[in-house]
Image (cartoon, rainbow, N blue to C red; front, side, top):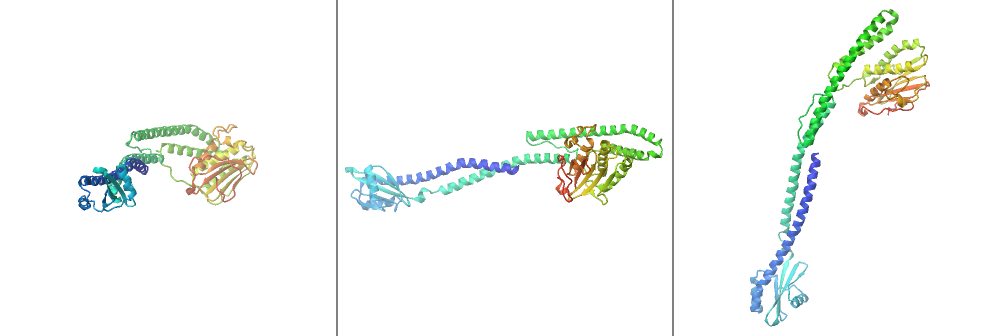
Length: 447
């Protein structure tokens, strides 16, 4: 901004300076020219009294010396003779004598002034004055240098004033920008002291008001989340008591309930913690998939669903939390169990590419007729809220990846989750979801 203001000051001051200094420079030149010609006219006028007394060449020679213009002045006598240094052609002299008025003419080295003087008896004498070119421009260069210096000082002063004014604006803007960056990074305590122009003061006050409102909204949200989580404790306790009465055959259900209680505890703890900047997290996707498939395999066996896990033998790191990835896998597998008939096969494939990791959950069910609608929360139909797919999409986009829905090789639906592991090429969070076709070849990256 300071550079822009300086350039504007240079442009404005330069235009003003040129608008005044160019005419002044031309006027100075005209003044110097007029002064030189006026001096020549004065020298010619000094000889008029002498010519009124005598036209004797000897006396005129002495008079020419007394004018101080010796070598540049001459007198053309009525009898055709001349005294002094003659430069004017005879035709120009005759013309001046005939017109009976001063005549000027330009030569290669200066100007000639021919002034006729009428004597008694009708005789005419012509005084010739030569004005060298350097006399016509004497002092012009110095005057132009002074004017140029004035222009430079004017422009420099304008830039200095604009810069001083810009510093105040830039400082306030930078402070506001740093505060906004700190707030975006999670520092909810940041506030600024509004200063600068009235517009920036208003922006600073609005920023402080916004920050206060954000703190209030987050506090209310944390309290609401904690309250809702606490309310879940009562039905969970009742459910645990019921499961305890069922004996050993309800062990799987008790494990699921324990995990649900752990998730509720984590939600309460997270809700009670003050907001802070997000930290870098990662987990082993292969381990998470093995754990979750081991959990779901019991239900799949009960429903005679063939299932297979592919590509999860070696560690595959992904830039998301293990708990979040587990929740997403459970949501997607839960969709398979809810929306496909018993006995429907499904596969879970983990694909590691260049800078990306892909997770494919494919089934042999009826498929998803409208993928775009399924990705909109509350609009997926069939009694579903679309919440699971939306959570999965947000998790993928948090790493710069995408969520895709397509037809699977088993004949049903396939949900592809792409996580970007190369953080140098990370796509900003909030990338729009894509509904693509086909399972990329090994080495391909998610688009």
